Image (cartoon, rainbow, N blue to C red; front, side, top):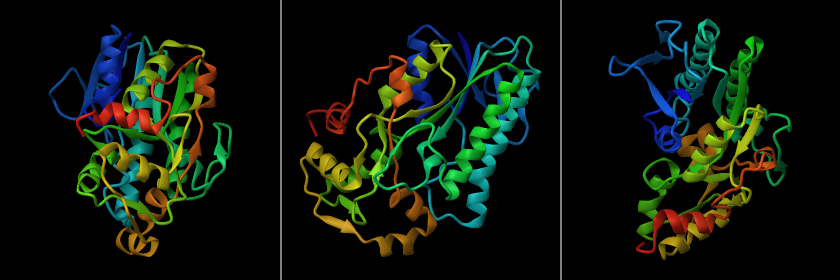
Amino acid sequence: MRIAMTGASGLLGRAIARVLTESDHEVVPARRDDDGDLRWDVERGFTPPDALSGFDAVVHLAGENIASGRWTAKRKAAILTSRREGTRRVVEALERASPRPATLLSASAVGYYGDRGETPLHEDDAPGQDFLAEVTGTWEAEAERATAFGVRVVRMRFGMVLDPDGGALAKLLLPFRLGLGAQLGDGSQYMSWIDRRDVARAVLHLLEHPDCRGAYNLSAPTPVTNREFTRTLAQALRRPALVALPRFAMKAALGEMAEAVLLGGQRALPDRLQATGFSFEYETLAASLASLLGPGE
């Protein structure tokens, strides 16, 4: 397949593009500057408007980082706009394309469900009520508009992608290596995670199986509590993790973002993905971290 990809330069995009290319697909990054064959940005969409003509599929990953700091009103507006307007521009370009790509794989997140405590979450469960649930619900609704003109739409609800080169895991490695790893709050919040290699394989699987459509949780089948995550990462690095960051201090420092991203959680399960025949290479957190961090840590 010839595949257009937004967000190809990001951590997740690079991992996915590598696996798609290794599987003999052609990945064409959509870039915001003139350096490349395909131009795209949130404000203007694709240039020219029919730039997606002749592609077989589109993988849409672009969006503002939700965890880069306190959620001011301006920051929240940027997070929502990047996903709503960015996805709208992709769908508009799909509608104009001739011949039209058959498939749109659009990113979303398990934040769709809101903070649901210990409740196991499946793809047909109702959305949450907080800001992240609002953002992901809007994001997915924009992507679904492409079904009106015959495009197969897959909404990929990503868990936390484990990659020592970037994202949340990379930020945690230094303090944990220094013996300063800490549980967040009481540690009871669930973390839906997925190894970077499994997430790339899952995207390839969804692309290559034309019967797959709708929402899929892209997270490992063994979500863990933050308490378990802290202990397992500390063991993988052979370091202690004896402290806990108080909830009140985190909320004072980071406000609503801390409450939603760090202290809230989702116990999302990949039922629909596994029902299609996909098998995870890294089903447990300990196995994933041991492989990613290596024996020398």
